[in-house]
Length: 254
Ligand code: PGA
Image (cartoon, rainbow, N blue to C red; front, side, top):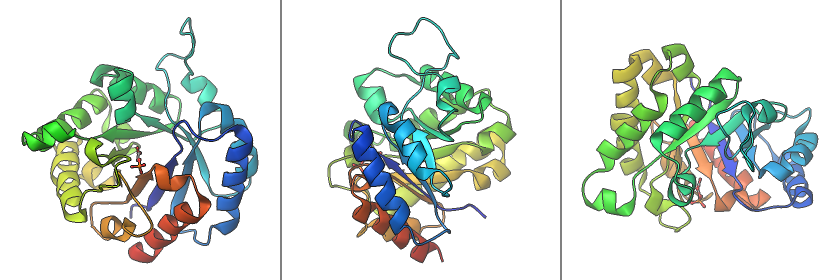
């Protein structure tokens, strides 16, 4: 019912030329149509990667976005600009929350703006190590989910993708366990969606795991009933490892 999705978050890596080469290699090596694949290069590579992906089923996403359509916001990119190139946009990534002080209200505005323009948000939520150690994981993840989606209709909420990314697992080589991620997603993400929008929305929304995903550990996550795929950072920067994750997902979900 929910199509598996693997998204690559390139973060601040790859020039336009490097991005083009990577996207080309991924396009050539892709051997399944069971998994939706999304590449999220930096803004400066969107146009080049778009050209490479033309005519393929691989989708393009951005890594951030402002909530206004236009205006005096030096250095920002609007949904109107992104929708020329992208179907998806990552919003509320923990690196944006941590280093650029994005709060729940900014992220809520961004989610609403993306949906207004037909972009699919990949909303990131997740607890820090100290929050986890304090036993606050559920409360943090539920609050981030609820606040980011406040004010949406159930139909709009159904169009959001959520990525559960425990902050302590990102870029550390220390992934969560599949059982733990499944529990947080089932109870605190799908549970919150059910309270806020009803059971159907909770069942229809795609939820990904993110944090040190590799071809070796991806099956551990996507074999779980609540987990529909992954948001991949480091391992999305090489075609071989990214394709490995996609193909393992197709196998595990078959
Ligand atoms: P990682 O990053 O796969 O390198 O841990 C994931 C992310 O930040 O989305």
